[in-house]
Length: 283
Ligand code: C2E
Ligand code: MG
Ligand code: MG
Ligand code: MG
Image (cartoon, rainbow, N blue to C red; front, top):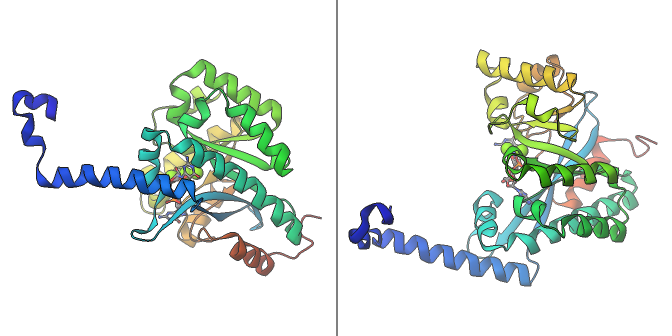
């Protein structure tokens, strides 16, 4: 906007925008403080299989902020990407998630699969694989119990080194899921060349699946093609029984959303698992 207006660029500095810029600086400083004192939390949202058993959880970052309340990651992750603050945050997330899942095992719940969202910046760093190996070694989480979630965009850019990294992850036994599938511009035919194992259908399609014949058709298409490519399919953002049932009918493998459970702190997750599964499940 400022560029378009050329010499009249001062128009850009309206009071609202000055306020917004101030907000950004304030947010960045607050983020830094949160990083320094490790103020973040991880919540976990269960995933169930076709039999209704909890087989895994997704780790979701939470920032309890004294002034702003719980700040959604959707609000601060883009800024943290820009400032590079995402790097220390991501390292904390990965080690916390691996550590928590080991704790869950010690609490008698068995080792569930844990999905961790990766930031593009983190994924493309040369130190990424080394850090990951170290985190797995230190926490003792078996690599096959970890699944990393990437969005389509991450793989479209910088493809060659991205594919190398994916092959290395496969070699380690770590799972890779394409998150928010259907919102980017990649196609399943493009994915066939990538060493990934799961696609997560974006919740915008799930939202409409019971009302829109088009969205239902897209979902059916994604599931059927994914299965032909040997990929597992997760549907995210399931809020209603009807959506769950329809996805079941279409052959979806795993289900996640408020209908199953909301994201919750580790202590609550342990209670949730106690209440929903026999302790000996899976043994
Ligand atoms: P995502 O990975 O697609 O995560 C799913 C989001 O959908 C989460 O939002 C979750 O709380 C929300 N959700 C789950 N079930 C339902 C439902 O039934 N209905 C609705 N309306 N929403 C549902 P959240 O926790 O606010 O996270 C937003 C995004 O922030 C995530 O989208 C992910 O892209 C990113 N994110 C979260 N945690 C991390 C993290 O540790 N690292 C990075 N790099 N990104 C993260
Ligand atoms: Mg995700
Ligand atoms: Mg998602
Ligand atoms: Mg999503």
